[in-house]
Length: 241
Image 1 (cartoon, helix red, strand yellow):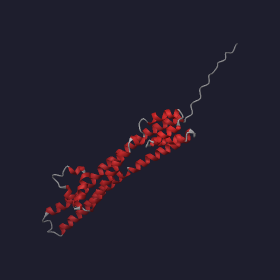
Image 2 (cartoon, helix red, strand yellow):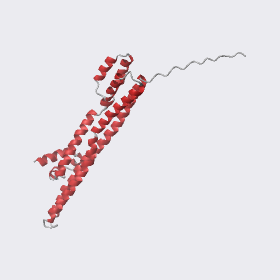
Image 3 (cartoon, rainbow, N blue to C red):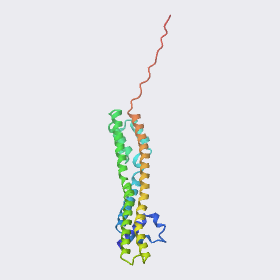
Image 4 (tube, rainbow, N blue to C red):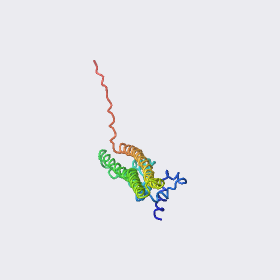
């Protein structure tokens, strides 16, 4: 009963195989797939959990929300740093935390603030990247586990044939190989979407990182870079000859 329940959960995540459910009872075959199926099931649950968590928390709103720059500039220009910090405390984003750092260290120079803000943004982006790293693990491990399950299943199938009536019953061998190959199908069905989502989040990180970098650099240059000194007027003196 437990095997059938686990196989049913696996089928929900292995959508490419579900197309053939009417012609091929994948749940029944997967329930007899062995230990590898349970490992692939665990990997599929990890894949779904990480994907949903990243889709919810790794968004523009969490990194560099639109409109925040426009709200903080007037307060900075008015030197109303109390209200500015109160506004930033209500924002849960990387950009808000970096701006809070700028406000706290507003007495420092351009080089110190620029270096600190860049380090803070880089650390937060790497933390987001690390949270999605589990997808790369699933994409790597799942097909290997499926292949191992297939090899073990085929060994078992040939072992059964060896102690049966030789090759007198080909259906016995075919059924064993079919059950074994379910492991490979399951592993690949989990690995492919995991690999796709891994690259999707890598691309999103680059996109959001560039947006964050542009906004931080614009603020630092506007708030901390010394204004260029006005050019001195050159007076031409006419010499009388």
